[in-house]
Image (cartoon, helix red, strand yellow):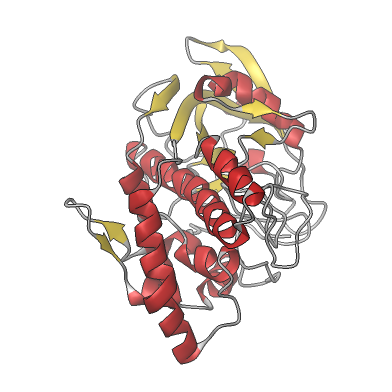
Length: 348
């Protein structure tokens, strides 16, 4: 079982708060491997051809789009709430009166392996001490979808694909950026804890979005829910964050509890997360290793779950359960090869 005697960090505030976003700060959190390989069609290109594609097309294109775009409208809301686990439920309390229950977030539990459940990574109700849960919502804004619709009407399908890919990765980058802010504010290690989005095997029930919407007042940053509980605008995500050092990504048929800590290798891998950035003068910098290394995602997953690795699709794009087109991405709603929502990671 996960340890229940670890110190509970003190958040900088309680309740929800909209967090100002500088889009250039998000750039270093873009997953260029997924953007270039999955969304922009570079999958399967290797060696000298790949280096040429990076040098002559993808990097100059991204730099130009980043400087010239006027359709990305990032917004973010973050909430810190007192909480306790109660079996498979995470009970979320009112920050102004921690005796008052606001919501119960419900998660499934593995039937085998270590019988993991996301609720396990928070202090139990009978511990007598409240834990803290971070909830977040981010969006790249609705104008991305509007630009995509206009490009489709004009028959500019290639440009539509590039805009779509950038919008999806900005939403993912926003989620990563805000998660890094949570780690900093809770005085966590840079690779400590995990973030999950609803729609993955560890938290598959997207109707739980309604509870998170209420807790975060997500409509306050322009988010709505469809009748099927999908988040709109489509380049948006909701997520739950655990600070517990043993927290891991897992599915109902894979994943085990580490004995000590479980560094988030997908974040920690410097070949994928270091190097590209926007300088103070607006100059965009790229790092050859950060966006050209082809196997780091699979290796990172293997390091997270060395005993039982399940092959994962290349990327974690938006739009759970949506249909794909032949390119491996869905140009209308953000779905990708994994069919999993943007903003968190998990395994089948």
